[in-house]
Structures are given as structure tokens and as C-alpha cells.
Image 1 (spheres, each protein chain N blue to C red):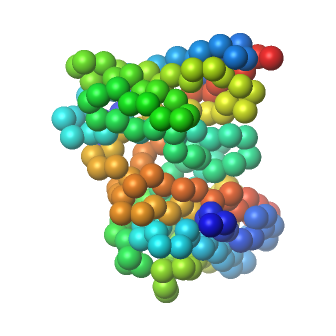
Image 2: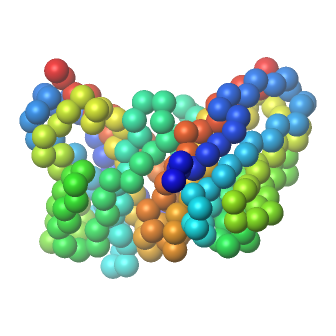
Length: 112
Length: 111
């Protein structure tokens, strides 16, 4: 398996623009997690899904952030409108039946 | 939430054992102890986990104190590729809930 796949790997955008981050979990995994990492706040869980259903979104910063999982092999994290403080590395991770989490390579987002 | 305390940084010589400590004095009876590490410019990766007994796998060993208020991750023979930030995390169930990452320990390996 190729592991967790994230795209794009790097994204540079201007304040106010919509940003969509994409994640393909490991095939067969039933949990999917979105994290954000910054120097100031470290690694934070934003939201996680089980069998495509959002279970806990209490880490989502505000209404500008939304996440979807339309099927077992794809998830998106959308920021609209984006702000400079959203600049961070966003990681997607997946796991099988609550086992260890496998992380993707991350998307480095820069909002100017 | 029960929290963990780790040293900010540690250094070790290459090919020597490394002992990474973690304190978790408020751990509950159902909390598992998880260790993840994050190599430079990569996402975190699982290292090991345990509940009460010491655990071994191909990457490392986990030694858990009898009162479970502390644990130690042991890398038996450190290599340069082990240079990373190591996170000690408590969780009620293995993996299927929030992993609250702290600041971790930055391990530097000296050639």
C-alpha cells in the first residue's frame, strides 16, 4: 500500500481565498483524522471520522473550517475564507479499528 | 485529561542505548501509554504502546513503572535515523480517540 496520500504537498494562497486539502486514507482503514501543526500550538487534532461519519469536530477552530468524507477512500478539509493565521502543516492520518494511526506526509499551507 | 511531562531535548551518541523518560502521574487505570515519533519534515509515526506490562517490538522497548506514573522508551542502539521528536501520549483506548500530542522530546544523535 502507498500509505496515506495527501495533496497538494504545498499550497500558497492569498488571504480570503478558499483552500481545499485532500486525503486518501490507507485502503480498508475505518478511521480518518485531520491534524494541524504549528510552532506555537504544536500538533492538534481538528476532526476525526469513523466509517465516513464525523465523530468529534471539537478541534475545528471556527466555522471557516469544514471537513467531509464522502466515501471511504477520500476526505477533504476546506478553509473558506483563509487567513494568514491558518498557515500550518496539515496532516491526515488513518487507522484500522482503533489500531495505530498512520500519518500522511502533510500539506504545508501558507496564507499570505 | 491526564497529561504527560517529557524533557524538551536529549542527546545521545550513535550506537548507544537511549532512555527517553515520560511522567504521567495522573494516569487513570484505563489509560494506555502511546509513543509516536516525528522525523524531520515527516508526519508522526507509531513507535510502541502499552498498558501495564513492559513491551518490546522491532523499533523499541517500553518500560512501565509498577505504579504506572512514569514510563521509559528505550532505543537499544540509536542510529542517526532515530533523530526525531518523540511524543509520549495517554489514551483511553488504543488509537480510536483523540491523541493529544504534547511538545515531546527532541532527540539528537551525535555521530
